[in-house]
Structures are given as structure tokens and as C-alpha cells.
Image 1 (cartoon, rainbow, N blue to C red):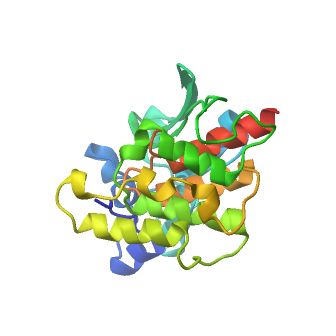
Image 2: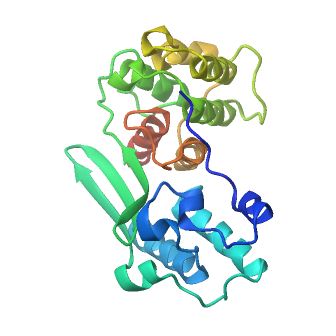
Image 3: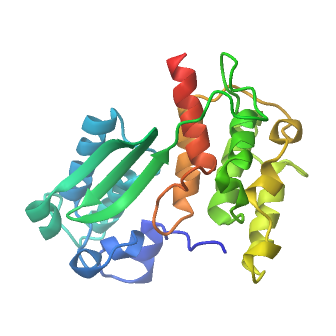
Length: 261
């Protein structure tokens, strides 16, 4: 079933006069959930992302925290130099590690994870896609998702959003193509949310099989393409994590392989 989309900071501000808290936009609990998101928290997360990853992740925790902190300051609920107790006492961390051949990026405030992104290794001999050529296209990366174990996952709203972003990147058009992959994914996500029992639901492999044939046009995956798809996927998941082996992860792996060619 589709997961609840994190509400935008502006929506939170309009609903009440309390500052936007970590629990309003992240899947956290305990004391952190009731802590307001402060400007120095956001600045620290952005600095730590840049130091660890070389850039701020589009749609990631730092950008969400910046929006929330800016809304809190604009509403006069926190000061520009304020920092939360958790960030001050326990710190903000971004780790970039590998589990086997899989890259795992974990972002935390204190001891609680606010975002995690997974980039799996894509074998160069993955069947059904031309991964042994010089470069990998968006269509090929989507087909790799269909062939992976994650292909059996029922399509939810985060998958549909990621597929829509991938299709728009491939075609260069900022609209859903009638009868295209994004339209099929959105229909599947809506239908799955109303269907009981996973065995009756439409899976990623159902939607993404022969993705290259279903795309009006295709292009080589770039880091910018992957970031756009990652952002779309995590914005539609309450825990703001990418699905291991899912659409965003496959695009990220393909972009990495292309960059290393």
C-alpha cells in the first residue's frame, strides 16, 4: 500500500502556530520527535552532507530541514542562531559505508536516523539489459529493477513517483505520457492501495518489464537524473529512505557506473 507522503513545512506552519518539529516531517520518536527543527540543525546537516558526500542531497534531510527551519524563523517561533538540544548534545552525522557491494548512506540527528539511501551494485551481466555496453540508459536501469528481487514488490506511491521522474528525465517532457510507464505505475499504485493481499497487486516487474520499449525516448543515466529520481522516491515515503534495489537505487547505481566509465 502507498505510504503517507511527508507533509511540506509550509503546510505544517499553516495548520498550527507551533514550530515544525522533527516528528512532523521525519519518522522519528521519543524526545527528538518533539524537538523543533532549528536553523543551526539544518546548517549542520547541510555542512555534514557536503563534507561526506561532496554535495547536498536534493530532496534529502538537509533540504527538508532547511525548509522547516526557514518556516520556523519566518513565523517568529525560533531564532536564526538557535540549535536543538539533540543536535547540540548528540550531534548530526552522515555516514557513507558499504555492506558487501552495496553503498549505504545514513543521516542521523542524535541517535535517530532521519534518512537512508541505498545504492546497490549492478552486475554488468544483468540479463535483459545492455549493462555490458559503455553506458547504461534510464530504460535499461528500470529493466534491471524489474529483474531484481525487488521486482516482486507491489507498486506504491513512492515507486510511482520515482518512475514518473525517471520517465520525465528520459523523455525531457514535464508531463505524464498517456499509456506510458508513469501512467501505468500511478494506476498500479492507486489500484494496489485498494487491494487486499499482495498476491493480487501489480508489481514493479509488471510495470517495468520491457521499459525501453515503453519509453517514448531514452537517454544515458547521469548523476543529476539519479538525484531527481531519488528525491521523488523519498519525498513520497514517510521514513524518507530509498527502497533497496528499487527504482531510485537502480538509477543511482547506473549513474555511478556511467560516471566511472
